[in-house]
Length: 185
Ligand SMILES: [Zn+2]
Ligand SMILES: [Zn+2]
Image 1 (cartoon, protein in one colour):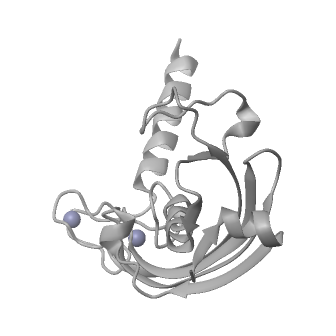
Image 2 (cartoon, rainbow, N blue to C red):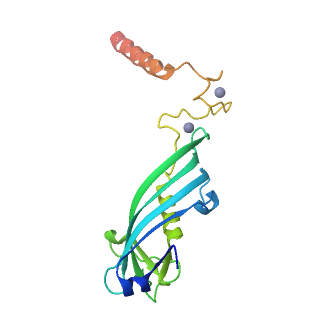
Image 3 (tube, rainbow, N blue to C red):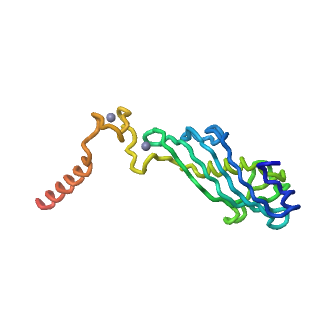
């Protein structure tokens, strides 16, 4: 079958390479409020057997998306390429469906399988999810929204805005007062 990593095929014919692009991945699939649109997601991968019933998949995932900035809430474009390395092991019989047993730190990239095939779309989606920052920002220096009136401070300065640098001058004035007090003592 196409777009599926088939472990039986690897057993039979050796390492396999895959290339696929998905244009049907939606923000709902990604399940993050900050994502407003997902463009084409491209995956390139190579899979091989790595021991008894164990398979290693290496590859890269490339995608574009529109995120909403978590400070100013404006949409902005995002593009990312990430490489991945996943080790598939048969799920131990004692382990339940949603339990994950992590034995060593280096085994964080282990995934347990019950079926001997992995849809490339699932792998691609997983990498997209991992690539989304905890707090997406349109710019590191994004000024965000005014907490009082909701104005976007990147575009306008609202009336509740204090003049820029006010706080710093305030701190300096405080130091000056302290120094003055010390001199008086
Ligand atoms: Zn922003
Ligand atoms: Zn304001």
